Length: 114
Image (cartoon, rainbow, N blue to C red):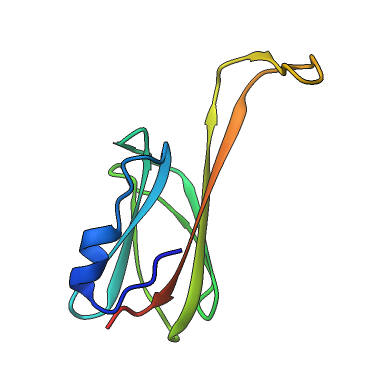
């Protein structure tokens, strides 16, 4: 959850270096929102990103891992995406084999940022 009072504050807290899968928000002066999906710091292209709240959208990231949209109504929005790690293994608890791991990330914030 990101709670900020200004676009300057958003720039300060938007990126988390500690998250493997991160959704990094930014907003232009005219209110257009851009989200960038990063996996271990690298952009994730062609990834589904779901927007829910007053604005409902199903988007797909471009080659830079970005989507850009304009909110239709102000309010609390949530953004959800995932990536798959194609590394097979065995679960240490139930000892079942798996072929990949799905990592999910959700960001919640008020839009537009003032």
